[in-house]
Length: 302
Image (tube, rainbow, N blue to C red):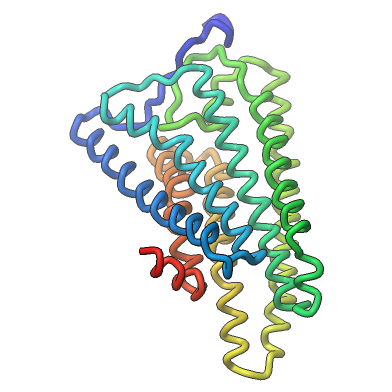
């Protein structure tokens, strides 16, 4: 390929060649995203329709569900189409758009999870100031900051990624940045993207430390609550968010920062499904386990 401007299509080679396995992939990609669409759709409808769920926690939960739905709808439909019709191609413009939207939604979700940790900290440790510090205007500003930060972060990564001349085949079922970088022919673009990785890792680690410190303070405050019922309610507010954060960080970190010595096409495919498809399907279940008001509203709706 002479340059990226003349490359009209890329090939996604991760899906199986046998027709039976292609159909199995199609049904798997259909079943798990349908569960994600159902769970997140119920959360969106419940929070939007019930006035009792217009709290800061549920406001950020609504935005989290939006990002989960967006991640599923950005990548999975194309993989389902390729499996069903036995094709491999994706247009260059489509691949660029997929990378941009996917990174936009994933980074926004990470920022929202950090904000939700901030929300839990003030709800448990400073309950008297909770409504003052996290009013509707403050929540709207924080949500807007998360979406804007995700947009800028995605724009920066996408601009540094696409300069391909070493072929057009990706060993993945969607356009993933590490696999695209293997085809990069722009030395400066490649170095710029590689240079972003330590910055991203440091920022992610800093947010992780903030989350750990916040939860240490939260658990200390919870253990000081005299009644067992109060402690149980406080843990019910925090544990689902902690599980979601742990699932999100562990899968993403291992997928993007795993050593090259253990990398393989099958492992890359499994990890991609683990951090791309599974969390949006599991997050609504985790969030509903301890949120009694949300469960009651969903029961009334159904």
